[in-house]
Image 1 (spheres, helix red, strand yellow):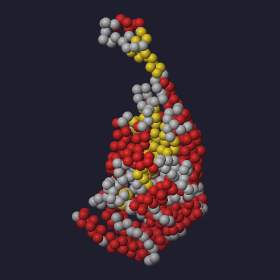
Image 2: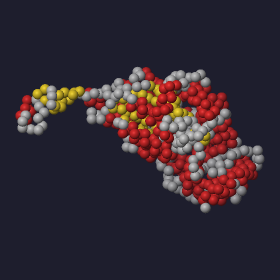
Image 3: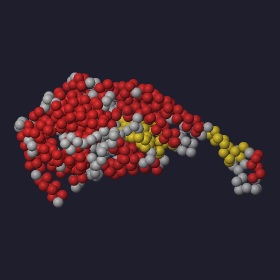
Image 4: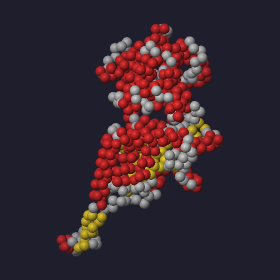
Length: 597
């Protein structure tokens, strides 16, 4: 029955799209409005799909959709969380137009009710955790609407919900923007105004500033020509939706009998290489070295991938293009975060240095052991001829504190963008502490663009401490293929002569790569979900079996914790507050530095 339904939806896709458009045009009264209906929503819920179209028409009728969309883009530009800001806007827009719609067109009320029920049923098996305030607010609003205003919640959440309800009285687009801004600044990010600016400062962001910014990583599709216009359009289209698009995508993915893989033609691959060089900097490997590394590493499920080794666009640019200026701006932002938190950072560096130094001193101490050679111990002479344990000598052994090497890997995918500064600080703290105690270490970031896994080297093992400043060149973008990156960095680590090897991976628990492939690819599976998690976990276990100690430092969202555990097992650290960073990471490192380690 389900298969038959899916076939019907595919057969009547055009008819369904026209139906949604007709609803939008009828409600808005504007037959020039354009939209691309999400027909996949029909498999999830017919009511959600129809209500989405209806609300897009109503929003265009009652408010200025472009003005709202531009406000959201400016707020994101000043570092608001896109996901949470959009969710707040969706709730406020629903309150602003939902009841007006139902009063004008009573038939809409039943579609609205069924939409709320389907969203709650499909997205919320239980009440979201206290840390997910937007999720809790969404449940509170929808439950309250379904119960006719009689759904009780705790006082704090009730206050936020009342703020959302103020959108019902928004007579102008600017009124609605003020409500959205207040809810976000109160419920989501109370420090936003202090750190990034008031609503007036948000609105004063110029189009020139927005145009210069790189929005590619926010877009749902690759390689737009006019990225700003595309991003404004994308956000504007999502404003009216109440559903969680991730749930829709997951249900659509399950529906498909096989994964759809985008096949890149040769000319696109050539374009990709040019893009990588222009936007990530020149490679520091010779063509022969690069070919050798690709031959060694890009095998099996990574057989259609390529590796690209660089010291970054700020170190070795092809030319000083927009991306160079963008990277420079992000470096300045990372440094600004450092100055803002420099007391915390210095305390962490000092504490971690002291922990490592104590462990190394203990390891360097001289100690005595009973042996079959060395200096005679008179008190043991009686054992000769009387005991099997006839060792009568003692020897002094000196511990070796220098036989350690560390690699630090930083996930530089676009999903890290919101916490980019903090992740850079984590790597900097580790690197400074290791430099203070003289342990050789390398620091690299990794991300993936098309089939290129890009490894950005900030410092080499034996560089001086001045190289640690390069960590502030850390920039996030695109996707990530964790398994290949860990395999490659691990290969370099295993070539070192030191006996004790340690790998620290700073990641968000999402080893996801964009679904693309080469023509006639040997590996048809997209790198995502269980497939990607299993591969990454396998590479971690393989390195551990070869004697490398691997620690995962989790800097992502709580919902991805389980994935992180699957990848790193018991050796992972969850950093909720950077003030505790040295204590958590230091505990692991000192354990590795123990005498018997």
